[in-house]
Image (cartoon, rainbow, N blue to C red; front, side, top):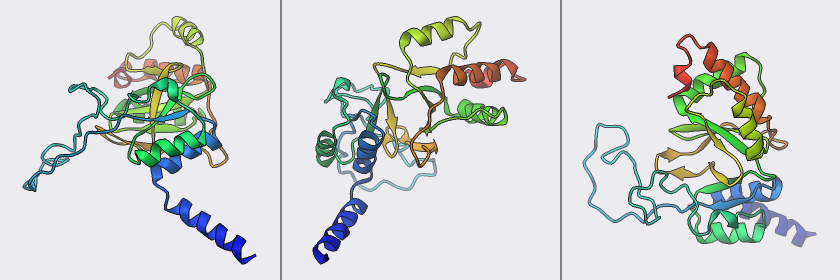
Length: 237
């Protein structure tokens, strides 16, 4: 009995001290069956002399970090697939543990589509306003991922054909919307991108993430845009 209790203590201790990204990746892959993979991450910082304090937000360089990929002008630094590629996304715990044991700071990416969640994203400022409108309308939302530049509303899986039919039926769709479906990916908390941390604005439910249909979310966003006093411009930028 003492040996069993000791083993349980060691297991709890190991989980408590496991890196946050590895813990999150294993939870997504094994508990929710979401296929995940590590993002490319950032180049190692070169040692420099201490910089003088800056009065500007983010310090002298604004907190920007260079992507580890070969593109010097990468538009999504750190938070995109590279090696392994997107097709390597898996729910296998052994592979996930190996990836994040070797690269404990690698951003956590979800391969969207198929049986995995998809997402609809829009700029952060517009998204905050849109969520307030949707809440007032009583629309039940699923998890919402927030980065400093964009927020993503997770939705139930959809096909590209289904999305095409949905958008074709609309007279107007806010140009700021992006759709993360099959063949796409989404960075998940607690990752960090070149623009800053990735957080849950609306965390998944404790019993497992509930996901709304994409039609309900897009319909509500389009209606909110059309009914806005400014003609919907606040949801378009």
